[in-house]
Image (cartoon, rainbow, N blue to C red; front, side, top):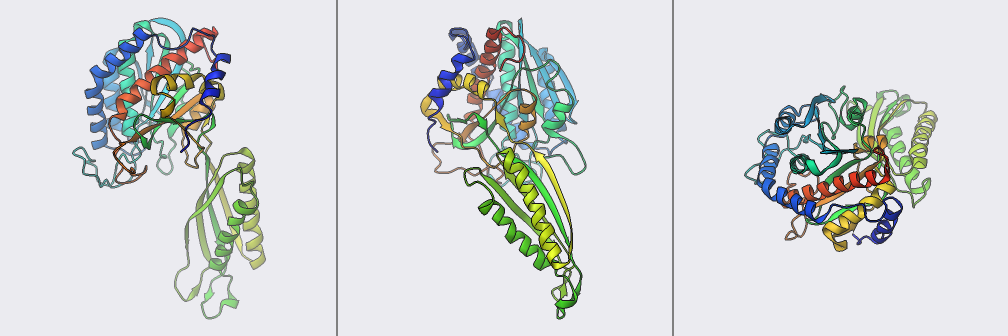
Length: 435
């Protein structure tokens, strides 16, 4: 990846958001952050390993939520449990009145059988923290512990959101960030900005971010082709749903290659094809399922319309029928440009320009998007690959194993971002949303 060229522009842009000389954690507070991280580091890593050993699927994070609530309630946090099924909201009020910012960690694991040789590998067969949510939860919990020790000097309030079901709720259930928003996780107290992050297989010590689109909007579709069955030796007496489905899949590829602007990325993937009853029977029914990923609103609207038109025309040509089901699942994560510009100097100050890596919008999906739609959001990626590794296992791999040196670094980054965001909003004199 290229080193970020826009960092200088972002740093300059911050002057339009924050008045000179009022933002940033002072040296004394910075030293106290480091001292608290050092004091809590072993405990935070221990918590991460416990969560990793005991992974829980979406909307079933009972023990993880209980652990988090039990850590924060005795310290005086205002803790609400059972938010969006198993979510935890913990509010830390600083020693002085001021604005409110929020930070989110996702808690759920994946239905993956772990194949690492870690001494703290998953104890739950077929379930693993293969996407690093154990790191997310421990980093945000560690940030809560650090800022709690410094709360007398904090001007404002920090809301810590521990969210279930980022990977998706079980069939027939609601869940995730959308439900957190619906149940008021950002409303009491009302947050002026929300932060989130994700581990990424880049070197430890590096951070990836960019203003604007960070991830794609992710939609899903199910298309049922309804033909007419017949003997395989007498195809003229039937309407072959397999042939029709094949033409649809082929035609879909032209939506991206010929109907979309090449500079505006989009992905259309047919992930499963199911149909037919026997090798010598003309199939009367085939089901196609897949996903569509887009970055722009123009493509988001256009791809769906073109897909439905293709299905309608091809099935009509053969005298078949169809059912077209399309679900808008996740919007794009969008980094608020003003908030991003305001936070860029914090990251450069902590890590150095050479550790800031340019993020090109990826076609992955993240439900943090719902939080960032509610209030201005800033989402970044934290490097967790050991520099000694030539390459790291990717996210969702049964071998995924982030370097734990990223955990205290993540706590340090979040602590500074949250305090700088509070200082910035206070400087604007709004006491509320200022980005």
